[in-house]
Length: 129
Image (cartoon, rainbow, N blue to C red):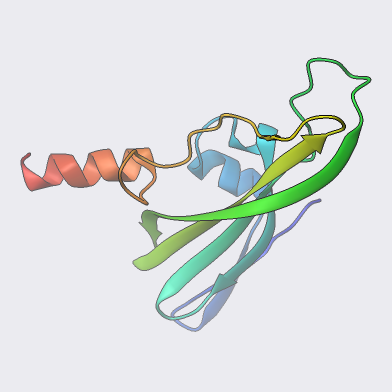
């Protein structure tokens, strides 16, 4: 799904496409996620990235009997001086005959924080710790 996000800055509206986001976000992010929603106001930018429906199956003949989502929201580098919130909609898959749900092991935030790792490293370096 190709989506453009409109960002309003100083009364001007600007559309940002997936190609521009690929320059900003970590390499490989769009291999597993697609941008499905975006909003901007005077204070913050909010983006929703939904994990693609690509189950981590070891046997392609296994039957998926249920799917669910779990949302994880993290704070990223500010865009144009606005707080930036990224909501990742993580997919979980349940296979026939198994009690547990499967998910991909994709680290999204720095352990112990709700910050994207590069942003957490930047803040840590700036604090002198």
